[in-house]
Image (tube, rainbow, N blue to C red; front, top):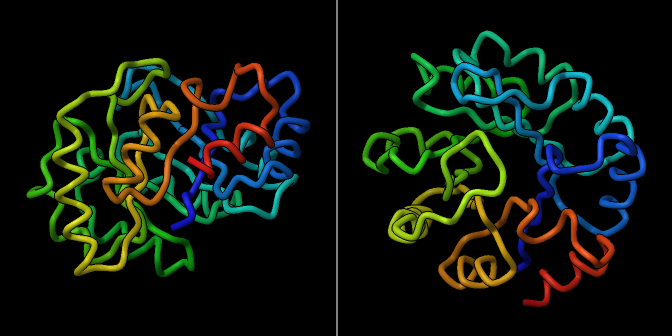
Length: 216
């Protein structure tokens, strides 16, 4: 099974964003991952609409938006208009999650949920009928560079069983070192958010890094 590799663009060099996008595209990544934080749902602020529009301008690859914001339903159209192909929302941030997921899909955009470390599978079980992607946070959302939370393995194993009954892909976000990517892939995860643990700030170029991750 081919790994879905998604560079976390908040880790990119914003002084050379166009070159970063082109280099990652040529390296063969699958989805450009855009973390959007409002300083309220999580204690940080990151990418905005103009950043996403810039990424969209220089690639034909899929672009996602991971909305770590309060009341995402009120902002969905902004991201759709910016050209994203996939939108993740956090169930804790939205009053009517299923309605919002259905709206995203009605606009021809793929829908996903992001599950925080303290969110149980039981609370999102019904939502799995509507999602194309489930992103498991193996760190607390909001900051790069956190350690992997070991007991998230059980959650991933449970989702792997559930996806046999439904049509969604499992993406892992948080402390995804090459070793963790290999382990999670063997558990049954489909894809990975690539940050400073596996891609950015390394001594190898993006093409070499992506090739090595695929071959693991």
